Length: 329
Image 1 (spheres, rainbow, N blue to C red):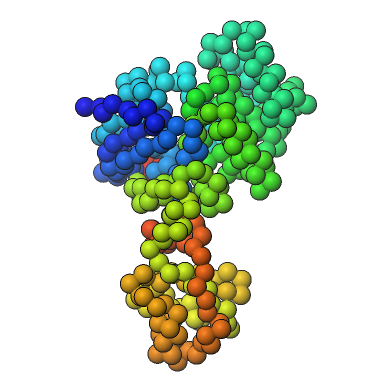
Image 2 (spheres, rainbow, N blue to C red):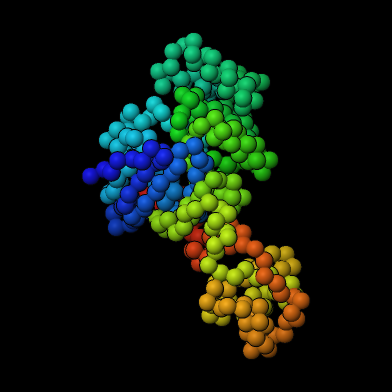
């Protein structure tokens, strides 16, 4: 039985599972998204982010579990939900043979918005997302950043209370990504709830709350700051010579979760089971005939990538790459 939704949550899912044959793309996922927040799914391609969004929007029927979105039981009431949400897919679902304005007009007709209201809304969106000068240009001729702004405008045409964004910045440059996030904060300030998937650490850090996903499971769920403050590992940086050799020594030692080189530094995660990690690492290096000076090593604050590694065991870039939605997303 679907459980009643608490009014503070815009999305609640319980034991959400999706199987494709013997493969579980999402398994027993529990999720609560607060109203008015930007909530992020952080994880590599293939971890289940897109599959989860498609179940939450009613596009995909779960194998098991309950979904309540904006007080509606999904997928049973998916048709009613679609009038109140916006959805921006990974690939920018635009019609390349239509102009900017024609794309917006087409979306307006899909939502059944009357002509006068639609014209007013399109004028607003073209101004907000700096599309006025491109309104008669075919979507196929737009740059990545311009297509992204048009896709967001299309997703917002019906003034949704809840916006789903599936890796919306994967095809754009860093400046356009930053500009895009400023637009998301504007929408959030106006009361729009946003669920966004990403595999960029800097984007995840911008979210009010995030869920770290791996292999169809949520491994952690909290604010980025809380996750970084409460990481279950010591984070240590080592500055010395022969970092490649030192890395191979350290990653073979029990209680070292990971070691990654960042320029002239080696960033090492050590289990919290080790109470005094710096003397412990110095001793481990001596055991392997490698001398480190105390000034070469220091404790540092965790970043979100450290958190991801501590919960999944490997960096996000080392995860298997596959296209979500092709049965494995």
